[in-house]
Length: 208
Image 1: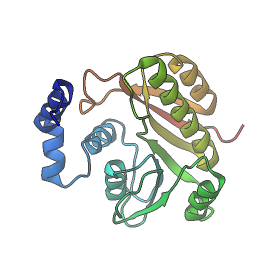
Image 2: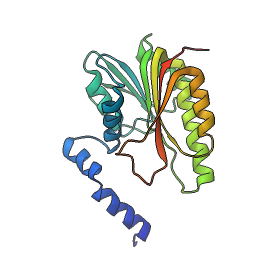
Image 3: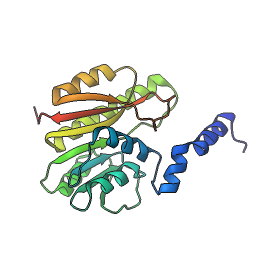
């Protein structure tokens, strides 16, 4: 079956992508690792010894970076609906974290310790139809925020991917109710044509 022009151009862009090449050369699971590394360099969000929860973690690019940064005294708990190959220093819980059973498993892995940071690079399966994709993306962001409220300690932070469009302003206002600061970031490793951005919310105020 012949590939469409669209899929051919995507494949060319993918294999010509310097971050794809670097991820292969440096042993990272995905190009997304470089987004987190860049955000880390700018904001220093992950420190040694931290407890980090990674939502929508598969294939593990962010968990891999987080585990390296928190070191052996830290903890990374990753969760995704999709399976993920094991990673050194990462505890993985497969399933939908909005499901009570999965949530309880994540909480059990935390072992009565509140997290210092929740990270989420989640995105819906994009259809290319903005009126479908944007609400789904905003729903995932809302779910990440709700999860963060459950697991974060006061003063902790949330880093998550969102997309420019309807619902973003309302989400930022909602974040400001729960966090002292909300910053917008667009790492260079994020494709320029993509409407994705990252919101870094710091200084969690605790459960309202």
